[in-house]
Image (cartoon, rainbow, N blue to C red; front, side):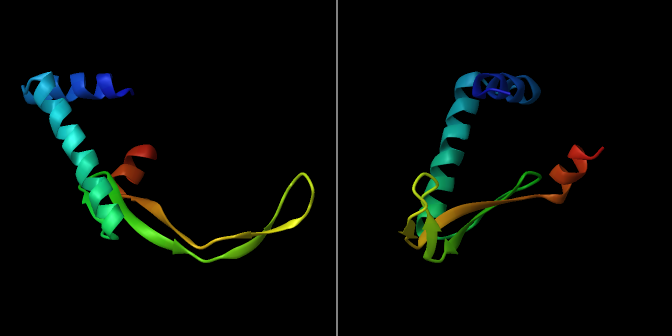
Length: 91
């Protein structure tokens, strides 16, 4: 489903205008980015939880040359699906 289709579907089911739905989705994305940037987790009911995990520095290999390379530590987003979403996939 594309963003346009999502906006149209939400607009149709709620009676809100497409413009309002688009602004809400954009605001949700902005707040999710801000939460992840500060290290907080954000929960979207019925969908899941987005949190930040810390990945340790490690040694990797260049697949072309086989040379060892150092991969630095970093923070990465992590998504955990809600039980309702998992159940919907297996229904």
